[in-house]
Amino acid sequence: MKITRRTALKLLAASPLLGSAACSSLGQRESAANTAPPTGPFLSTRESLNTYQVPAWFRDAKFGIWNHWGPQSAAEYGDWYARRMYVETEPQYKYHVAKYGHPSKAGFKDVIASWKAAEFGPDHLMGLYKKAGAKYYVTMGVHHDGFDLWNSKYQPRWNAVASGPKKDIVGLWRAAAAKHGLRFGVSEHLSNSYTWFGTSHLADKNGPLAGVLYDGADPQWADLYHDYRGQPADFAEKAATAQMAMSRGGPDSWRKNYFDRITDLVTNYEPDLLYTDGGIPFGDEGLALVALHYNLSARKHGGKVEAVYNSKSRPDSAAGLCVLDMERGVIEGIWPRPWQTDTCIGNWHYDTRARYKTPKRVIDLLVDIVSRNGNLLLNFPLPNSGAPDAQELKILEAITAWMAVNSEAIYATRPWKTFGDGPGSHIPPPAPGVRFNENSRKDFTAEEVRFTTKGATLYAFVMGWPEKEFIIAPLATTNADVVGKIENVSLIGYGGKLAWKHDARGLVVQLPPAPPCEHAFTLKIAGLATA
Image (cartoon, rainbow, N blue to C red; front, side, top):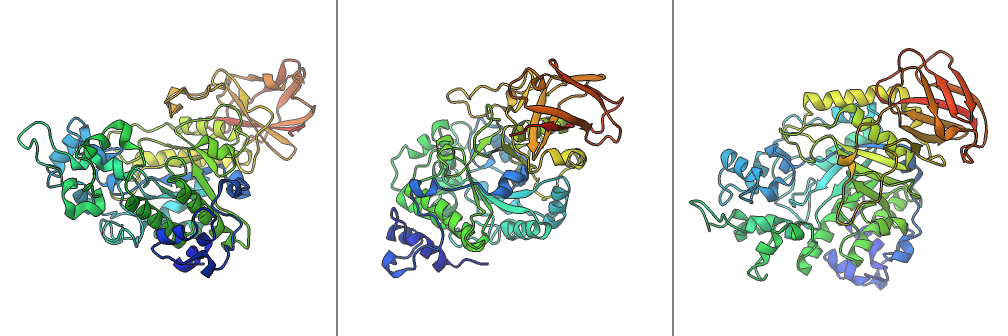
């Protein structure tokens, strides 16, 4: 069902916070009195959004794949290329000068022109992702670079249909996801673009072109790099600092443009999942966007909200407004609400210098995250062509092989009374100012165990293959969490019977000579109370 602009307006207009202001931000000034009441269950207030319930599909899915792919991928030289190519001390600057020319003339607009997506095959890739076990797919909709990957009404010159590959990237991914039965999501990283692009308004400080402004300062490209006219003289310098890179500053016209564009994205493509890079942006407008996203879903699904909104704000998630997303990290303990880790096998944007995670590291993360009530959203960065490289395909094949054996202990499961045990189990809360914790993790060994449950079954993932005997200490009969009597223990993927006993030491299992799969293996335990 395609949602019209007028329908979106009606869904927003009755908001007690925004009212006609929401209409104004959509470019129209209809009063709330002249529109139908919202047909969805949510108003754009925190009190209303606090009643949101995470849909069952997301809780059951556990694993999604993301392609963090856009015009910055054209250079194939890493993250934040469009910002760092304007910083003399960054490797991207030196690479850009050698490949494209000096950024006073050949700027990011010229990188966009080089993004061709010549081997982009969304149907083929979606088939691979489904085979690997992904239950949902997320495409990038717009990054900090301000280039919209759909036929964007409010970014008419710098979108994927008008320039670059001249294809509706979001629309093509959406169609492929629908064909293969995957839930569809879109990420947006737009809200801090106004300050993030500050570097493009500066100039070299050294060398023969010192003082010659980069192309971002040229007003003819202001619809891409933003218009800083009217800002203080030192605004670009301040915006270029690390402290300002992810701020959400900018004039009212910028906030309006943000709201128009993301509303256009949500109403035209109706994603099941909308990921925002950061917390809910821009106060009341952000709340209205979340309410719109949920209400459109309710309208599409007969009154049932099937939508997910990802925010990186713990308070917003804890209050129930949305689903918490942790970038490149694992939460401590079992989070009481479903949550998500988003991470990448390498760098976010494709980088020829990148070293990828091993399949074991990916599987370790997946199992650990699911045991803590979370989902893993894993990015495979695509190169300029849109076709994964050979190493990426090998990682995908390894995930496919592991899921073919162990997926029953992943999908539609819930946490047990404890998520697991072992020296790598206890993850402290992040220190002030620290966002990511995955790089501090080591590969798990046979000392680590993780648990999930489904119905009356307890699954125990052993994260390495011991020589013969394995003892699961948390299942000791003396542990108060262990209620009931074990009736049977089997090894998923192994056809034979296991010898085992259950006593004060734990569950003691005699294992076969060889594991049924690489990486973590799964014991299926019947009889213990799982609730």
